[in-house]
Amino acid sequence: VLPAPRRSSRVPLLDTKEVLKVRNDDSVKCRLTARGFLQRENIDYYGTYSPVTTPASIRIVVCLAATFGAPLKTADAASAYLQARCTEEIYVALPRDLHLEGVNLEGANCFRLRKGLYGTKQAGRGWFYMLSKALIDCGLEQAPEDPCLYFRRDGNGKIEIALCTVVDDLLGAATDEIWEGLMTDLQKRNIKLDLQSIGDAVEFNGMRIRRTGDHAYELHQSHYIDEVARA
Image (cartoon, rainbow, N blue to C red; front, top):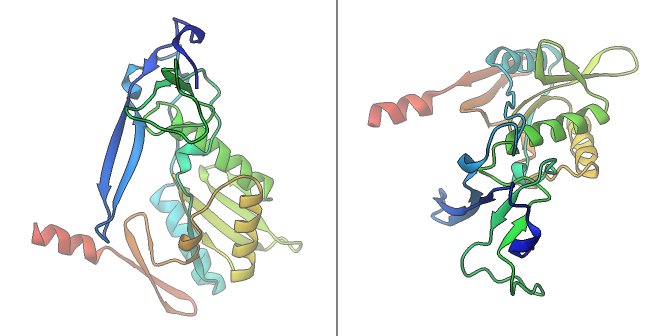
């Protein structure tokens, strides 16, 4: 927490905004976001592109799961954009009526971000590189055709895990033991996961997933069709 004189005049002070979202269980989620449209290209940020996997890569993972008779697994990162470290100098204004236990805010008017914040231009890019590095450190190889598609082979050269990512969502084809081991390794590398999301795949990227046999999976969007019909 910094007072105004310690912030360089060339660095803009970003306002913040609270975004509310009503969940399916009627609880309300509040997320503090930065008004990143005030950032200047090549001054406050140098890149924004953050890739996501392609539909073809998702089908490859599902196809490998069906071929080898492996279960499809999913996991979700918790508040993904807040996990990656900031490489640029970013300041955000203190939210109104903010009180932090044990922190004296007298004379201070801004925070300097050490990690990402939703709304900043580079938040998605920083998260992608953090997750990608963690997966590679866990022994997975990035596919040259898709930077969000990963494979890992066992000692005999057989694929033991295939995985693709869409921002903070992971879909993988692997046994329970291998998937749980990967999740543990990711958490050791400071990737915070929503533990309740780790398990058998039921839905991914808007598609429902159903296992119909030892070597068969069904993907459908019937729920989306129903929503469009009702609208």
